[in-house]
Length: 544
Image (cartoon, rainbow, N blue to C red; front, side, top):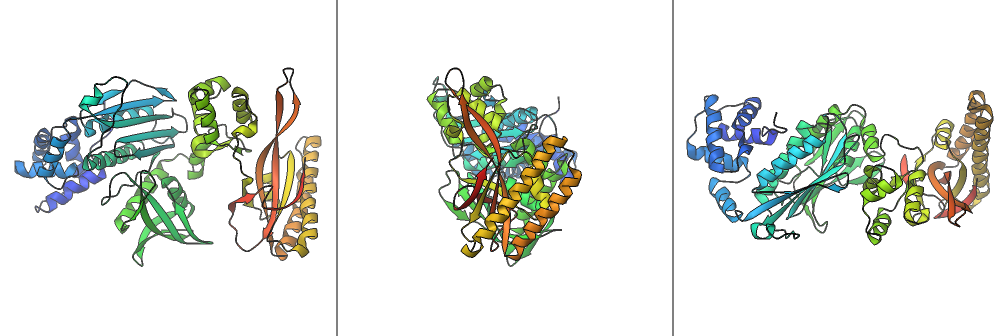
């Protein structure tokens, strides 16, 4: 059976090429990668045995090095500055073992103890790659780490959702049943293991994006990269907290290259460009440290993006949607408060997997709420019933909804598809002198949308001629608003209405898809923004 990962990661091959170049031996990256594959350095954790394997592999390529030089090279491949430092680190950590624990779809599997960080990383890679079924399937792989542990959380479009943890322990505590007493990793070993995990997963499964895969060469390995984007069209700056956001931005500008401008990297695309600064946040999120963001490091981020983008079977947006919403994504969703849900589960000593079985959905349908927070009405009602709550007991306590600027009548009609109720809000920036006219225009919009919905019901959806006329009427309203310096925003929400009680006296809730129309002054806006949907402005109308 073929090994699921290779030690021919780009970083290792580059180290080998540079080391040999210092000794006036020229080698290309491809040959270096093949030598490392032949050496199979991960077969053993004993560095002297690794040196012998590497020496033999180099000899097949007609490269002869002294044994002391090969030992030094092996140390550098492991991330150490010298053989002596590697030897000291291995002596300091001989009393450590590493617990590997896998959880698949919320069900904990049996754990295993391994003798080295390298062995634990190898086992983690084998399990992860086995559980990601294909090379191109979209998947997110969050690489979380602390000084004592590494956690790999994988969410994917079709394969199982799972996590794999490595916890560093002393051999003494590892023999104590029922207790996990963590100790700290050696930082050099941990950095090397993390780099292997990122490189090998993204090479073996290119459709998988490793989140928090950026690693600092100069700061501790438990720091996460945060990027600040500047010189953006229509915006002063934007903070990006992980590769999902960064790569979505790179895709939006069709980025193909990186340049150095005024000492900072600039990502350049066919549609736009932006400058980037980077800081590092520690694993506790407490401290941030500035660090030089080199042009080569920015190019490495671009290479990671392009490899992932080219591997995807569809667009970047569809990859995000397939993971965040699933294959059965609904057009109308509502914001769920995962903390509320988790508190309810803890009070009942109930797991997410148990709740999923109770309501008849997959584990991922509920677990994805932790990161994405959006659920359709049916799932909210099922969870509320299983936990004996009202829907409000699971929803975010916010009066905001994701909304989009409406440029024309056709876009507004698309946003209104499926609406059962309507509401409207007038922003505080609108001049009092304009309020009466704005209220009339908002009501006219709602009336036109209700007319079309009623005709669609009566005519079985065959409303082509009526729709053309209504689009023109909506365009006229939008033009009037633009001339007054105003813009229209449309957002979707779901309202849960208590209409009755069942035979046992329990409340029966009915979800209503609600379109919220908001008018504000054109001073600062983007195509997608969080917009008040019922407060923070002047309510103009709300009816079904």
